[in-house]
Each structure stands twice: as structure tokens, then as C-alpha cells.
View 1 (tube, helix red, strand yellow):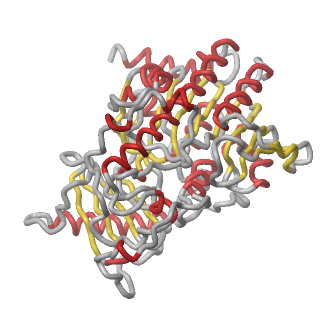
View 2 (view 1 turned 90 degrees about the vertical axis):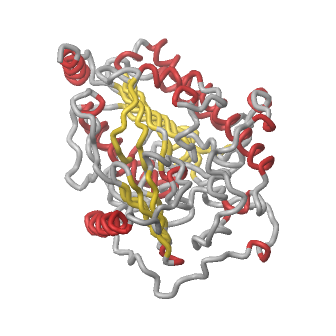
Length: 470
């Protein structure tokens, strides 16, 4: 109790007694798995700046996205995060949606964005009239990325392709804004990295940090997915031939870790700029991602599933009033960031926002946040978890899977057909249907005609993925 009182008082000071309202910086990664931070348990990866945020703030071990209704999961994922609306009610192009930067602008904030924007130019200009080095698209090379700025008329201008790595360009823009920002007026900065999405191109210095032959495979590595889930040959899955060899996955992971380490260095530069500006202590810094990625887990490469490696994301929150060096087991969604930002800024989120503020968890007043999570991918899969168990319905082939995430966090052992688990499957199935109704998901959990459970990979043409939207 004695430690709890100053903690709450600290948060109240954070929200009300600072010279200005707290600043907000959201650092958003593209395709970054939850298990890619050294301080959170991955001893292979080098992420000193993310590690510092972990030490200085609260990390969420059970943060999720809701999924996606298309292969380019980052489109609906980013739309949900920006609008606070759920997967089945969000407008992917944010049409007629009031985004959180719009609300913060109305509350006196300077807003600034740089990086990837995947939700339409009109929504960008309405949310961030001050936006520089924006990539309007899904994917491209990391060097020479097409970029533009939002002009005074709200239209995209100054089209160019800077030769530098895009993560460095985005960090440069954020630092430039911070140096010139009015110190007496709060700001909200959104840095949307295009990494570690493929092509996973990092400067040689970072590639040299990792020897692929020494990279450990994920515990749930498989050469092939054990059954047809209805989406086994989408673009992301063609990044590696079948069966996925151990050495090939090691090489993919080494390149993945390298580009994350490079991104981490850019995060360090942005944090240093906050310190040099003298606003670091009064800034809420959030690191999160738009989705996870398989890279060999369950024999998959992409994010087009509802396994933990695809729908669970890293989320770190650091700032005044936020508990330090704490790992929270509270389940949450990225839509919860919207009301969180509003609350710490003293603004009111619109009634249509479906997220729940994380402030009670961040301040230590609460240890739980959500009791269940519903995830989905297209018309093909639905996932539903409670505090311990998770049910996956593979709709296309009419197959269910049950995992005990407490004892089996990597989803290795399907319990759905084991003795004594029938009641649990039924309980979670009923919970899934109720959650679908609550979130506006009208998808039937049984197919009109089930696909064959076995998939013949030998009939898939061997080819490398071409650039696309994902």
C-alpha cells in the first residue's frame, strides 16, 4: 500500500501538474513479433534501446491485434489503432473516422507523422497536417523508398526517393520536428517504421551482427504447416520454398534480427533527441507493432493466421507515472491505445471508440484489463482465448484446435480431441460466438463446403514473392 500511493500520485502529477500536458511519441513497427526484444527474453537479438524502454516502463506480454480481413493485415491493423474501432467496424481508409491525432489536435497538441501510411492520403492529411517523408503504400525496398510530404493544401507533395535506409530517414524527420517543436506546447509524434517487413534489408554493419548458422529456430518451427488452413500459398508464404529447411529459416531470422537491431538504433536516436530537448521526462513513449510474423513457426512465413506468433505483438509504454521495469500480464488490444492517449492528454475519446484505456494498468491500479481476446483472419480462421486456453477454428477445413497457453505458449500440442477437453472446447466455442456478436463479426464458423484437409505443396510453382501489398 505504501508504494501504491506515491505511484498513483505520480500518475496524477503526470496528467495534471506538469508545465504542459504530457507529450506522446508512438514508435510503430511493421511485422515485428512479440519475441524480438532482448530484455523480454530473446537472448539472440541485440536491442539496447528497446531494452532501456523495458527497464524504464511497463511491457505487455499479452498485447494483441484483432487480425485482418485481407492478406495485408497491416491495413486494418493500423486503421484499428488509429481509430479505436474494432476489426469488423473499422473503415480501412479511415473514412468518416475521428482518429486519435485529430482529438489531440483539438486539445492543443502539435501533431507530426513520418513513415508508412497505409490508410489513404485524405485521412493522413486530416490526422497529421504536418507529415514528412511519408511512404504511401504497403511495401518497397528499404533503401530508396518512395516518399512525399503533406503540403499546405493537404495534398501529397515533394515526391522523392531518398537513397538512405528509410528507417534512418524517418528518424531524421522525427528528430528534426522535435528540435523545432514549441517546447511550451505538447506534441504527439507518430513514427511508423517500414521495418522489419520484408525485404529485410539492413546496413551491412547490422547484418554482420548475426551468424545465421548460430540462430536458434523457434520452438514451433515446422518444415510445413500440418494441414490446409485455406491460405498456404499467399504472397508471404512464397518467400521460402516448401519444405522450409532449417538453414533457410535461420537465414531469414538472421536478416530479421539485423533489421530490428538497425531500427532499434534509430529509436535510440529519437529518444536521445527527447532528452536533448529536455522533454524526455514528460513524454509518454510507446513502442508497438501492427502484427507479428511466423518466419518458420508452424511451417508458415507470414502473418495470415491467428497463431500467437501472428496476432501477439510487442508493446512497451514508458513515461511519467508509468510503473518501471514491470511486465504486465494484462490482455489488451492496439485499439486500447486511442483512449489511453486521450486520457493522459486530458481529452475525451469519441463514444464510438471501442478501446479501453490502459491508464489503470500503467499506473498500477489494476492488474487485469480484458478477460478474453477474439482474433480473426478473413473468412478462414477465428481465434478465441481466455486467461489460459485458446481455441482456433479453421473454418475453411472445419477443423478446431485447442491450446493451453499457460503450459504450451508456442501452441505445439492440440488438445481438442483429447479426453476430458470436450467441455472446454464447447465453453470456448460459446465464448467465441458471443464475442463475435459483441464485436459485430457475422462470419459463420462452419463452411458451406469444406476444403480438403491435406494440401499438396508439390503442385505449387517454385517462385520468390513479388512485391505486393502485405
